[in-house]
Image (cartoon, rainbow, N blue to C red):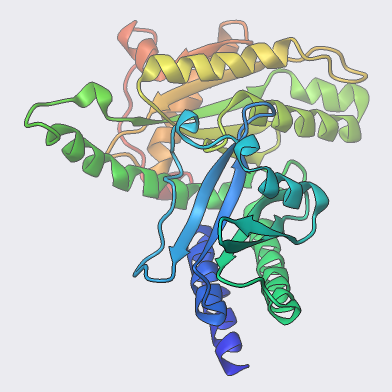
Length: 345
């Protein structure tokens, strides 16, 4: 029992979801001594959903492995290629089966909103009822702790990430930029800058949202915010980070090959919003500004550039997407001095 308590204490001692998943599979490997234990998440849009490995640990592995968060979805296995995992998710129950001469046990992993993946245990013998209860109990604690993290990190109305989580994500992205540049330079001794992914920050503002609240009331206004958050999820990729900063202001932190790809993604959201029929209101539009994240950026300086591009979009008639870099290049905006983090956050 003390060993179980020690593992639970370690698992709930982290506020990083990646580390929590690794700690979970490590704990279950030590407790059950299986051939392997892994967490798989179902990601992507309906019809194109894939399995993302969050953490995988075999009996003789020194460290857990995982798919990078920014994995190309097309390189991940399709969900239908593993029907037993789908059965586990759909039934919300433990599923057992065989993989050759080994035994397979699958447990659903759920959030307060939905079942998002499975825990997979492969062993030489079928898992006993006692072992199943142990895993289910550990997963309940894992679920409850994930719920606490969601409560502190997510906007309660839309379920998107909230503003206070933005700075950590941004600084983590910036810290990767120099490393990515070096990796791109040293592949074969020549420079491949164009192949090195870049981060982009976009600010999204609902046009005339105050009129929506004034005319239809705040309950309808909240419904617009909730529906827009769903449009954002369907317009961007599963690994793009989506935030609600408050009111009608939203932020996206994404990784793209170049500015053209980022512009296409933001334009897709603009079009999806413009063509969506919001109940009782009809049509609304959004103004969007975005900028490439730089190595020397603070969260405030990058946000300021994207926000200025939003104001340009609103001053130019709204329902537009503008790149800060293109506005500066065209002479429509001047480059401003860097802001310190204290000026905005």
